[in-house]
Every structure is written in structure tokens, then in C-alpha cells.
Image 1 (cartoon, helix red, strand yellow):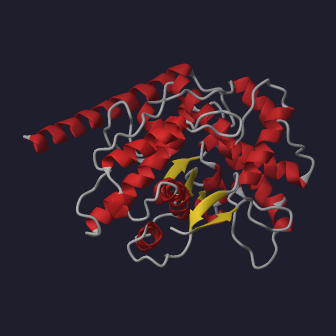
Image 2 (cartoon, helix red, strand yellow):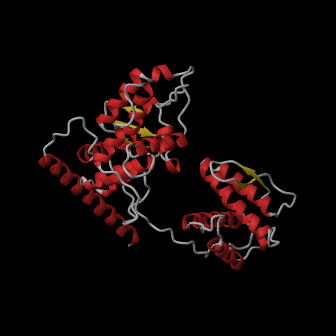
Image 3 (cartoon, helix red, strand yellow):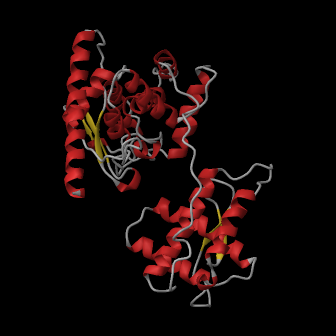
Length: 365
């Protein structure tokens, strides 16, 4: 795993490059592993992070005279894991358990690949226990009034302000990730159904989720009054564009949203993910079932139950409209009607959960 230094939006790190002269060396086998991931259509982010983590392992082994995967044993891997725990950055801070977890996961995947390819006789990382990642609550979640203050910050008398207000409303209404918003195309919106299609979200999975009337109203204003003046032919078809027709980068979105949060003077900090946490929290407080939140956020599993469930877009749209405080232009809906919708949704979710449990019980028997 010969390495070189590159920039990737964080301090310079080592990444895998081309195979080395030793056909059984770490560099050669590491490059083969990365090529294997590319052939199997792993995402570029996953490949980049795998390279990022494995390069540190290769350097750690090289410093100790270990140049081939066949020389690695379980005690050596345990030493490496302990070194991650004891490592201190320049400021004296340790590596987070998330970072430690990711680096061990990359090493485990590497040796699993080598064992399956019969490069090594046994997998020394098969019984290696990864550190537990702490489950923390988000540091900042906005209240309804605080959200409205942030949404009011863009100057909607200017084209940029209209676009930014539409972006903030989209984040608030859908809770989508910044990369997902950056990749939205104009034709991903279905105004008639009140939905938006997210293509290749995390884990390269598509999903369709509801979007509120207010967000659609601002997007419509942006599409008719602003976007045509931003487009540079050929039209890239991205929904949100910069003033020179370029696609908005995820990093730019974070910086822009953070500026509006700071400008609102809420004594809270955050960017795009702040709206993601806020949307989920406010919908839960409004009575939405956690499985509907799971579908909105695009999470694969519910950690509490580990039950895989899917809900229809029609029911999800109904729950989103009833429970999300910014989903409707007119919020003068009777509470009794909202409660009726919520009770029906809860009963449907309960039936679906019981059916899934019954099916699992039959499979086990």
C-alpha cells in the first residue's frame, strides 16, 4: 500500500496508491482490495474512507517491520487497536471512538477479503471486537419559533435570498442530508403528489419522501423567478444552482446554512444536519411513529427493534402533513382530526410490526 498525500477536506492524510514491487505486500494486496470494491460498485465515499483508514494501518505495520498481510496475527491487531486508543493528536486529544471504530472496521474488511480470496489461510481479524460507538443525542435541536427565526434570515427581496429560503425550507420539511439536497434534480419533485425522490442517498438507496406545501411554495417561487437567470447552458438539471449555474457543493451548503443559524442569534450552532435533527424531533413530538421518521431519514434499521419495515408513500405523506409543523400553508387544522389520523397510523404500524414478528417466528420454527 504505497501512499501519497492528498487533500480531502480535512488535514492531509495518507491514501493507497498503486501496487508495490512485492506481489504479497500490504501495498499490492491493499490496491487489489480497493479495485475489488470498485468492481462491486461501492460508493466513492466508502472507497475513499477505506483507503484513508487502511493507509494508517499499513504505516503502523511498516514501522514495526510488518510488510505482508500473512505476517499479521490477532495479537498484532490487538496491539494496533490499543495504539489507536492511546494515540493523541497534536492538541493532546484522543481519537474519538467513532474514528477508532471506523479504522478497525476497515482492517476487518480487508482481512475478510484476503481470507475469501485464499490469500491468507485464516482471518486474524475475525474475532476482533470493535469499540462501542456511544449513542449521543444531538447537541442542538431548534424549537418551532427558533426554526422560524432562521427561515426568516434570507433576504427574499434578492434572488439569492429566495433560493436560500427555498433551501432552508427543503431541509426543514424533509430532513434530507446535504449531499442528497445537492444532488436533487428538477424532475425529482412531484408537486402534485407533494413528494420528492432522493436518488442514491446513503448506501446508494433511492427513496421517495413527502415535502410540505410551504417548502413547495418557496421552491416554486425560486423555479419561476430565480433559477432561469442562474442557468448556464447546457442546463445541468440540478434543482438548486449557484449564481454561475454551478451545482451547490455539500460543504458550501453547510457554510451557508451555518451563517443563517448564526445570524439568527439563537445561542445555538449547526448547519444542514441541525435541520435534520430538528425535523425528526418535532415530528416525534407531534406524535409521529418512529418508523415513519425512519423512512423520512432513510435509515436502514430501527436500533430499538431491529425490525425492517417499509411504509407506503401515501401513508407517510399523510403522517408528515399532520405531524410536521411546517408542512401546511394553513395550520388551522382541528386537533381532533390530527389525533384521528395519528391513531389510525399507529394502529397500522402496530399491525405491520406484529405481522413481521409473526413471519420471523415462523421462519425460526
